Image (cartoon, rainbow, N blue to C red; front, side, top):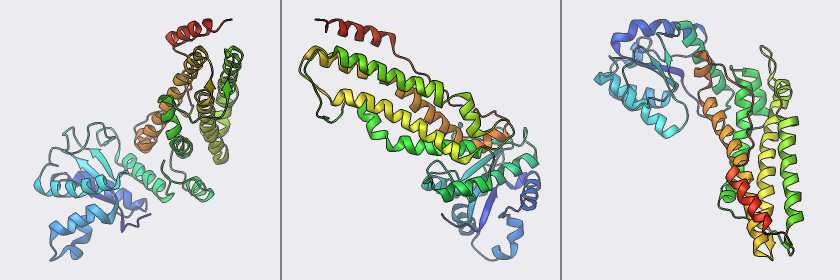
Length: 346
């Protein structure tokens, strides 16, 4: 983990200094180390300010607080912004934390990026949100961080708002990342030969596989991902979660995903002596498509929320800690499967 001289460096137009200064003072009161130019006059005396600010906004601060406004298009503010944006592109993780003063767009920043807004959020709210971001950073815990007892303990110790959600997302994201090649191969309809050969019409085997898939899904919906189990892990409203249970629940999500992948993988890996049996089996393997897509989509949604968790919580958004799972089979695929199995009848 890189070490930084400053926790944050505000980047703003001179015309907005009086609006930014109260937030700077609140951050200092919260123990945040702030680069504020008026505090560094002796250090800046006689140096090349272009080079000085470029270095500061590109490498000396953990976060840059970008205060966007109609004035934030001046040449001097543009220099700060470009240095910060260059670092953000290289780092590929959160670095720029935009704060709106008005609705003027900032060149180079996507309109979809999460902002805080000084017209909606008080100075105190913004300062506390920055402190929450730093708490998450101190725990060195992001959806790409390796999960170890030490990293989980650090996250539980710092307890940034929404840490339970972040822990769960990390377990799920990393688990599904490891399964990504198998997931991709499923939709290529590929699996290595597993040595099994089906010589008959395969009707009994097909029935057994339907029962197995139904059981995997039933256990997931009725036993694993219930409201009760999720409350036990994440904690009831206003109560802290249990790190060990959260990790376990995330692992069960990944394990269920892998079970469904393996169910279809065994079908694709089996050799069939009769072509109609092969056709029916391959159609049956596609029953996993909707389930896998649903779970993969849930994981992606969780990750997107985690990337802007502090901003969302600060904005008052209610973060849903439950894990919706939608298991279904495309009616057209089911019709295709029924027709294929009829052709297997003696």
